[in-house]
Image (cartoon, rainbow, N blue to C red; front, side, top):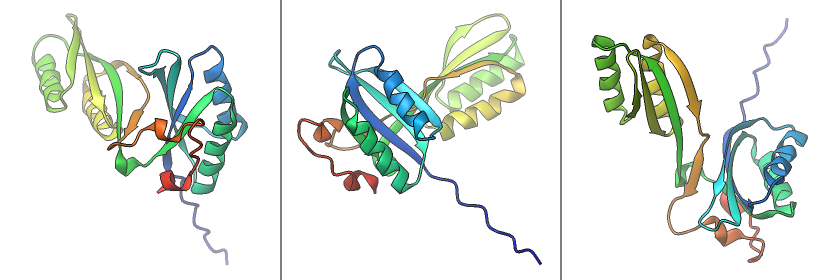
Length: 190
């Protein structure tokens, strides 16, 4: 008689914030590290910081504690990397921007889409005779709920920016720069 072997639990989603030089090829170097280690990037967002010479990469991957520690340490070794911080989901602010173009001819359908948009604090950013384009900013649970409700009207296009995140409170990613020599990974893993 065969016993059912339980499926392994899926790895948790980890949010990693990385400060890097704002130079060509740096994003490619960082993303190659993820692919070489066998990670599928769930979300990726990149943009300059208040210093135009530095960009911030926010990456979300599914990984256990040991693999996350290995990945963060490997990232720190890359020359253009200034700082790496694993963000604790309970102690960070995470948001993404989603743009959604929905079928909504004038009349009852458009009114219902506008009501739903209002509930989710989505903004109408474009109107045509047959469509409404909405923008919404929030956590994925909020955006997924909005998308689910809008499916009945017919979603024509949808685009997401990828998740961006900042730690709550006074601490910053600059607290762990290579220059300061603080690489205590364990304190960011909790």
